[in-house]
Length: 170
Length: 157
Image 1 (tube, rainbow over the protein chains, first blue to last red):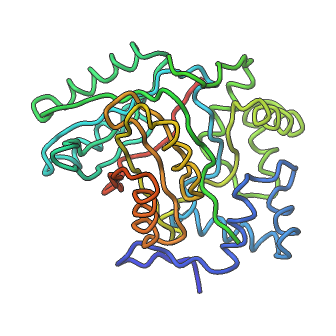
Image 2: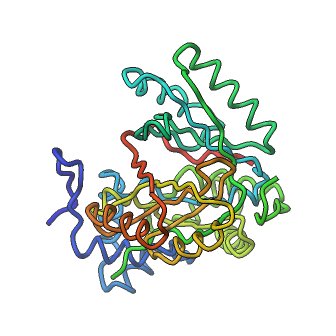
């Protein structure tokens, strides 16, 4: 099987070899001069095959990108607010695109409401040096959304209870 | 200020350039570190040592391919709970004990516990949520993404 996107389900089929590559790189990319060659040796594949499969997974979206994930607290971004917005469903996509493009928003999603407990359908993670900076950025979002905002809230994280990341198991 | 979170790290100019550059993607080629080092005006050995040090110091939590769980055939969701303050630590332990719980954050809101569930198949999400509800005695509000709008890591330093 090839790692191709199933257009209907937008779920690609990754084959057993792709899966071995994913498992071998979940903890990270080897930090040696030729990392893909090192992976290839470990997996008993050719370097060209490893690189070709990584490129294919990247173009299919299975790999978002190859790069670094900073710990935002260690970079001094101690204000991290999850802003949540109740906007009309018929404009959520247009508004989500505009919010997601803001430089201080790292993630932006349309999620389901749970009425009556949870009226919010648009989530935007906002990062700043402190809570005051986050709140001023939230005001910018509110201004951008204008009359489409029916209600909003900001949830600040107070503690990391667990952070292990995702793991595929072999 | 958030509790129990790491303090800001001391970073020099090269660290900052490396952190910014490595959030923009990485080549798939024979000598990718040498290529990126050349862009940054340094050499391969220095770049490798700096990345190692940034990982060791916890400035970077990870360096490598970022996989999208749903496209690998797995399930992924965000879930929230409203836990009574007196029960919070106990329930946090119960929830964290599930290997499918990848991240879990306390937040200052009526919905005070927020976690990401990652499972080997989309169907497993429902079963894990039911198991967490049974174990803790609290309802779990499942909030899977319906659509994603440009996710980029933009922590420029």
